[in-house]
Length: 197
Image (cartoon, rainbow, N blue to C red; front, side, top):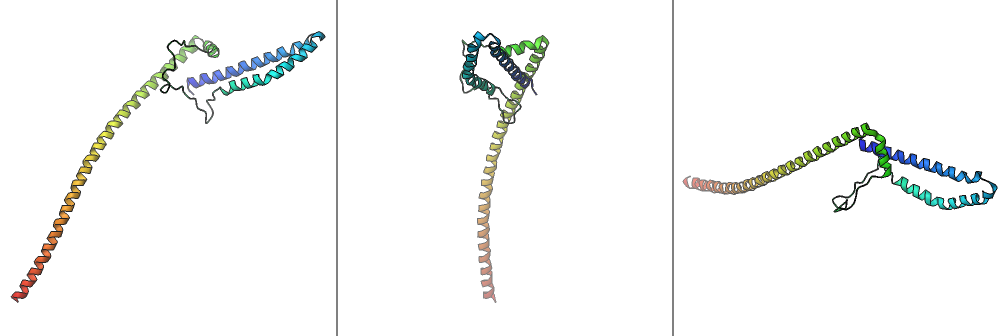
């Protein structure tokens, strides 16, 4: 598993842990009004009604956030890269790049040694990617040159085939003329033999 996949899985786990802590904190806050005095009994009973009315929205929001989590281990899951060639500018000139708070927390948790190792691995991956792209690009140009050479060779062979077919047709015609001439010669020799006999 590459370092990118490991970081995505760590991000997914940290998001799930934060969601679990938030839900636990919300449950504690909902239980605190119930333990207060009797004068607050009506207000505490009305608060769960309001929270229950708003709970579908929170659930749908959490569900939508969970759906955005990328599963890198699924058989049919794909991580779609942002459109770069189709989109003229991904980053606008006056747009400042920023990192999400969750990513910032994860990066800081790595520590100096962890970040140094991660950067070294990422740089190595980038160099390997550049080397692979260069080699494949050169192989593509070499293949194109080979295709051009093969096309020229095929054209030369086609020219030779046409010439050979023409020579064959000429020889067939000459062979036919020779056969007719030999038949006439045999007939003439036979007639001459009858006259001499």
